[in-house]
Image (cartoon, rainbow, N blue to C red; front, side, top):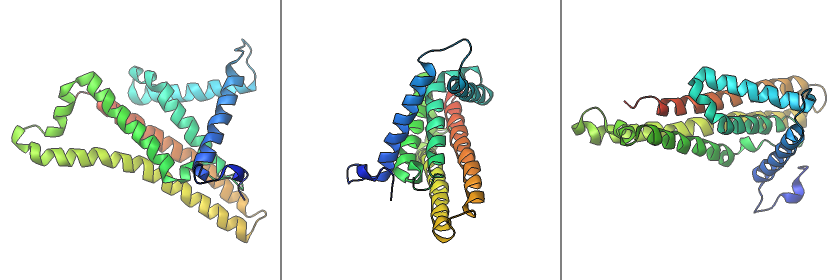
Length: 217
């Protein structure tokens, strides 16, 4: 039985319920961490400062100094995905990222952001990259380029969804068969893979945006 089963209805399927639960929890924690920024911060403030600094350094290392302006987007995605992934480690809870609707929505946000950034920086020159280097190759190159860019959505969404759903299924089966000490190593492995899958999604997102920011080819 889901701990949040009272919200489980056709209008609020489990992945939506848990998504709202995570958003509310993270919002409350963020408020507690920032309502009084002390010179000598507490544990919550220290934790959030460490998270923000880590993501900011990763952005600068991957995208250069201009990458820091994407901290709100990438940071929000990273914190949400990691929290959603880890939620499935708790017996009785489900990871909203184990549902394709959740991962696809985040992948579409990255996809739209990538091309908006490309158009804003390069203008029409960004569109020309889909047409190929020679005008008469445009009928051949355009479908190839479009498919290539659409495959990024599948790469981001299906990879995360498949891995987290697989973890949740393994945990459910193990808890059903041996509900005591045996699941502990599985839970440790799930925590590790949850971090890795978050890093993969974030890194690919940064690379796609960086490619759009680079000179159109």
